[in-house]
Amino acid sequence: MAFVVRTFILIAFLFGINFYAVTPSEKEHLKGNKTKGQPSVEVLSKGKKTIILERVFVDGEVSEEILHVPYLSTKEYIKKFKNWQLVEMDEDQLVFQTQVDDISPLLKSNGYFGISSDGTLSIFNGKPNKADIIQSFFQLDMKKLEGKKQEELLKGIPIKSKEDYTNVLETLKRYSIPKKEQ
Image (cartoon, rainbow, N blue to C red; front, side, top):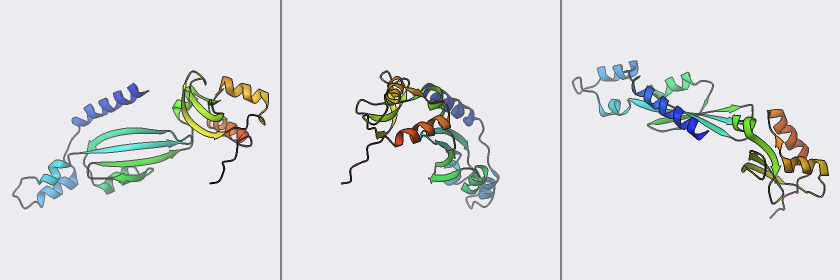
């Protein structure tokens, strides 16, 4: 998965190098420049902008898409990404975020509910006992949990849809051990 992300970033970067053009707002800035036709340092330093598009899934997973694009004003980027929320901004980059009403592709392809060694309901990247924990939720009262459910969790319950994800959480929430107040 990381290889795919790195490859995508590299391709976007390589293609982005060839797409630079002076925008109308930069042309306007250059016309009004008092240094007799020489572009200001501000315009030269703003040739490229990094746009990070974050998708936040129901399961908490965040995917990022990184774009290197010609410089535009912040207003123009906000207009271009009108279905996204601007969450961070500095001179060189803007971070936009959107909520995705679905589980992440990682969970759909390889996510399993299971029980960690301390009895905590967790999501594993692959079958439990052979994989890494992606996310942990709450500790289960194993005495109250019926044998069939325990067995399913030990083997791993695959997560193929948002419905699977929410149904398992809702079903097992009633077997959680309440957190002690401090």
